[in-house]
Image (cartoon, rainbow, N blue to C red; front, top):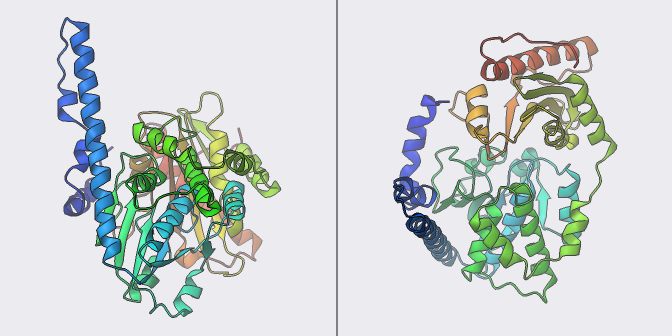
Length: 432
C-alpha cells in the first residue's frame, strides 16, 4: 500500500535521523549476493554480510549512547518530565524508568507521567511489584500545574502522537530534549537528541544498549536496579512476542539483562490474572466478530476508560482462531469522570508476515486536518485512536447511544473492509 500523503512528511524528517540508520536495516551488499557453485563460498559471503550488519548496528548503538551522554551532560542539575503514551505498555514504562535512572547520574530529576490509565493486569502488576515510579496525570491536572520547574521534556516509546499531554507541555514553552522510540516516524518534532530505530523490536532494547555502553552500571545488589532490569526484560518480552520476533540486538539485550533481572518476579508479573470485565469484553468480541478473507473484525461497544486495555487483549485472543491471520477489535471508550471525553480506540494483531500494521492502519483511517495519523503500528501489532469530538457524551439517552455506536461501528467496518475485501464491501451485522 502507498501513502503518498505522508511521503513529504517523512522526507522532511530525514535530517534528524542518523545517516547510518538505513544501513543498519538494509545492507546493499547483502542484497547483491551472487550464487556461486561453491557452497562454502556462499556461506562465507552470507556470514560476512551478517557480521557487517551486526557491526554497523553496534556502531550506531555506540554513537547514539555517546550522543545521549553529551546531551545529559549539557543539562546537569535540571528537572525534566518524561511523557509516555496515554496507555503505556511494559516497553514504555521500563524504558522511561531506565532513562530516569541514567539521568540521575547527572543530577537530572525526572518525573514519569501519562494521561490515561493502567488497565492491563500485567501493567498493573509490573508497576506495583517493582515500585516503578510512574504516575497518572490527567490533561486538566497538568494544565493546572506550575510547569516552570521543568527545563525539558522527554518522549520515550512514542513520538507525541499517542499522548494528550503533549500540547500542554508545548504550550508551556518546555523544550523537547530527547526522543527515544522504535516505531516508524510519526511527526515532525525538533529535539536535541533523537534515537528512532524502527529496525529494533523494542525500545527496551535501545535502553539496554545504553546500559551496556556504560551510561549506568547496574548493580545486582541494589533492588531498584534488579527491579528495573526485570521491567526491561518484561518490555522486551512483550514487544517481541515472547522473543519469537526478536532480532539479534534484542537477544543480546536479553542476555545482558539476564545477569540482573529477577526471574521469579517476572514470572509473577506474567501470571497476573484477567479481570471479569476483560473477560466480558473478550466474550463480546467473539459474539460480534465478522470474518472475511482471514480477517476477524469485532466492535465491542462502549467501555469504561479504565477498561481500555481489554481491547488489545481481545484482539490477542481473536487472532488465535483457526483460519484467522489478523484481528481488529475496537470500541468507544468513555471517561465517567469527564462526560464529554469519548474516543474510538482499536487494536490490530496479526501473524501474517507480509502485512504491515503501520501501513494498514494509516491506509485505513488516514490522518486529521493537522496531518496527524489516527494510528500506526509495528511488527504484528498496531492501534488507532479517533476522537469523537462534537458527538462525544450525552449517552444517558439509551436509543441515542445505541444509534451513535451503530454509526461508528458501520463506518469503521466500512474503512477496514475496503482493504480486507475491496471487491465485496458489504457490511454484515449478523453474529457469526
